Image (cartoon, rainbow, N blue to C red):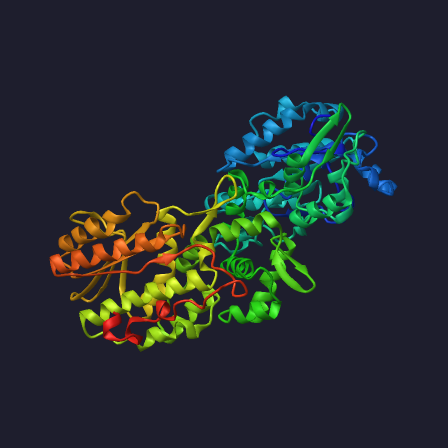
Length: 600
């Protein structure tokens, strides 16, 4: 038996599962202009193609479980002539008109059955094409069912040709045809954009329908391939695993089942147990999540990252973590994320909508938080506001970093202590508060490994920026010196400077970083204070390696009359308190101004 699961292309007919109620509504609703909004890969194209398929038969070929479909659906189906119009790649009204005519040519047999010669329509613009089709079909007691896919392109066209698009909207909504457009949430920006509409905005008059995940019964039928003559054997426990991991997302269901399928014979197969490797996010899926995430609002992205970091949380806890937003705004954004399948509820606890999105968010947290921080409104405020903002963003107690406010900078030594304090705070976050998860990713065989040096530096920049803002310190990442690119440079006015070099433990130049590179950067910048930050993952050989780095730092300091300190960070997962055989080093997490001079 061949693998029956379909990934990467649209489906229709017996391959199209669930959506029976939605299909009936779209074909029979009194509203003749409907906007189907859904996340990417939620099945928008498949829905439109299935509607096209249904209307090409005298008897609707709806799924088996839709046997109760009313007779009026069949009557409406036979009255429609469906036209699928894909707008992808269009940037102007000319592009839209050309693609519409190509779509008509592809469906010319359907129009020929209604007595329409499609060759006579060549050269007309989209508005004239639709009006001609509507008139001709009406003479044969037929109605155009216009299925518009990838409608987001209309946002761009609206900026350049708003008057023409307003006329197209009139055709969509004047009632002669039934128009169903499908897109992501991005299309909603047409209402918000400053477009010179003389009449109502484009989407006014469309009835909005959210395209959600498959219902439980429909998802089970897809997993078992119940609509085919050859079903797939699925153990109930494996069925529940698949449902839990995918939350009914049609693309993820097909994706996971395709990997679990095992053929038994020419007409039989079964699904095996889910293994850890089956849950790894591949590049195509990662790209899907990246696009979806980028199209969410700032608040929606903040909510997703907050919930991902917590694993599960109550709505009340979420509101407490986002005090900059009103409860009404957070509630509305949360509901929208649930509608699109990005979030779900379990016993009134919020969690990420599916296992794959959860894993992707955790793997990308440092980069995504850095991007959000860059977007965060940087309004004037006191240092306390900045520290509280950082604490909220990281999900930690503000008391953990409030000691930074006690640092007074009036000398190079105090400035150097402040920079050391920043990295000691990051050390605590990584080693004691799950921050190591933000520096790690999974290798091909599932083992943990450090992210690239560039990604690690982005995470550090994200953590450092609010701290610097709190003390009015300027930070440059990868500034160009006379001897190359330095990782970080911190400055306060013209007098106080500190250079920082970051290296991963497996870098072949780990020792050279403190013995050669950092001293050269200090010389080139005419600076006195340097900080070396090695990031460790493997504890094997760690003490000896760290000792060598500290010795090299001391030697360079004495030889060149500079100050070079090492602040190492251990990115490996710490042992749980119930299994630890010692408490640990309290002084490791004390800020420099809290230690005696002999410890600095």
